[in-house]
Image (cartoon, rainbow, N blue to C red; front, side, top):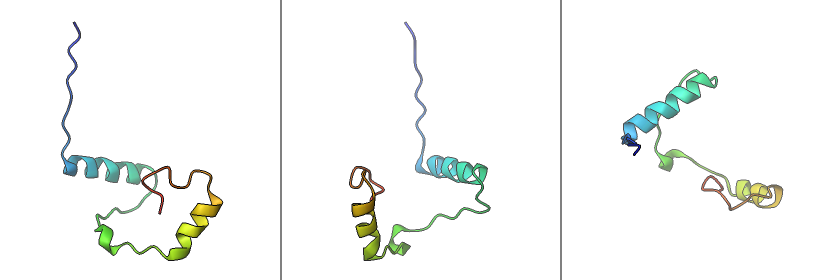
Length: 62
């Protein structure tokens, strides 16, 4: 029988992993911000809706 250990990651661990990956990919600085501070103009949804065949299939879609 193979025993598999799972590692529970806290939100802080997940954030640190994402920040590390961003730095590896070329970011010079990372900063955690509230989603309330992100403004998306209405035209962005239209650009995605009519310009992307995968619109609405992912949580990242506007």
